Image (tube, rainbow, N blue to C red):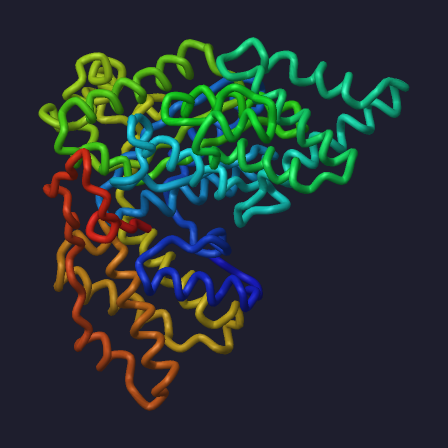
Length: 438
């Protein structure tokens, strides 16, 4: 359970995010409960990445079950273990395979959200490149050789991969701009690394390279990036992709198949040792995985690789080494602890400022159970929101009794949003397909 004082910034971020139905970007350690075995499995994956290996996991959970929150917790652990993390939500305009710029858009979003331990809120690409330059200069000074020679030596491994020569050339361009005080050249290099160049002609004019990061280069560019951050002193790269249900919603069977083939390629590379210092966490719903008509199981090669461990199922246990990790439900006891944590956070970590006693928490959960049944702990997002709303009213109106508020609280069961809505190949609307999960 959370103890100790909490920074006002973290307190406000947690409360405002949870009341809006989204995952907080900071302070999640104050409210994390349960799922010990799942976290241990992902921590082992992070350690494997840091040791030069690769990891692939599908994190499967219902809407509102805590899937996105769980991914954020794993991301925070990866940052503490000196990995670079990149994260993005898939949408109709962002997917892992496309021919109309959607994969490129996803790559650019991932680059904007790049985080390190020193820059956990994103936009860390420039600092990562600067770190590489600093390390190279230091080694050059120690060896008494030109910095350019050290940079080329470090990047030589990248040139063996698809797109690696131009990637290395862009990093050299950044160093040239750094050395000569040419901010435009540095800016152009960062633009290229973010996938923001639209034409090869512009890239060749500005940087002397013949390629750009486009739809076709999405996955290869991520593999190059994982090797680059390792050369920069980090342990590896964790790629966090959520809302993969948007692939399931694609109306075009050809588009779904192309994206599922890309998932298969990533899975094979990670499991066969063809990728290094990189891990993929993909968040999705059960129907996205299990539907044999439109989900990942509709692609035979993926169904074979992602099928559960039949021996574990017969024994009534969970195989936490499987590529598809199904999040266990929070128990009523864990949800009780979560409410205690939320009460503690709302009070800023000061027990003297608690707005409600312990008995109110049990009473609240009993009311939830009577109102929406087991959904209150299976998909607890609306339960959490209702509890925080109650605390807000008590905070603003101290004369109101908590037991009266509980009896009048209305809690809606989690709805699977627009899971049955299909997205056409040309549909670029974002608003009605945005599904936030805690």
